[in-house]
Image 1 (cartoon, rainbow, N blue to C red):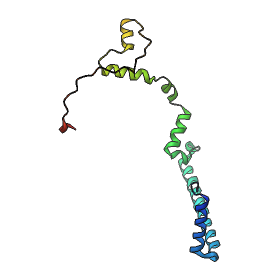
Image 2 (image 1 turned 90 degrees about the horizontal axis):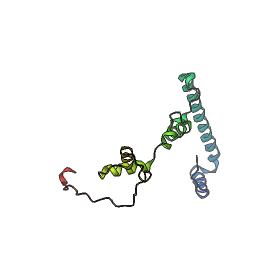
Image 3 (image 1 turned 30 degrees about the horizontal axis):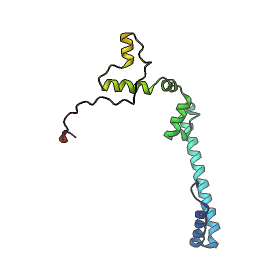
Image 4 (image 1 turned 120 degrees about the vertical axis):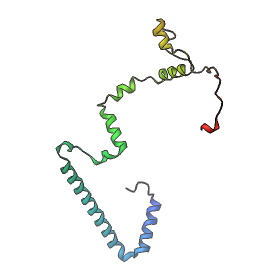
Length: 145
């Protein structure tokens, strides 16, 4: 709960509490605060139990921490019922980018040319270090943007 409070800040809070409440009332205030926190936790746990009872047996393994989007996504990726790892492994980003750049520059991609002509080409790799030919740009229209 207080992960980002350093020792100097904690000492400053204690000194401030002693100055505000006084040394006589401070123990009673600490007891009241701990009692209130305990009641809030009990209320929260009973509310969670009531919600689980109302949801029924289908949601017996439901955890409220799963409502956090990061936790939910991490749990789903670990579960992998959807086959996301297979999809991720089957996607070759370099090949896709090469095909897109070839299509943009009006060239036939090597994978399409190898299937149409029957030759294998250079193994499906594209030299991304070459600069593309400069195409004539259309005139800039300031009103259209």
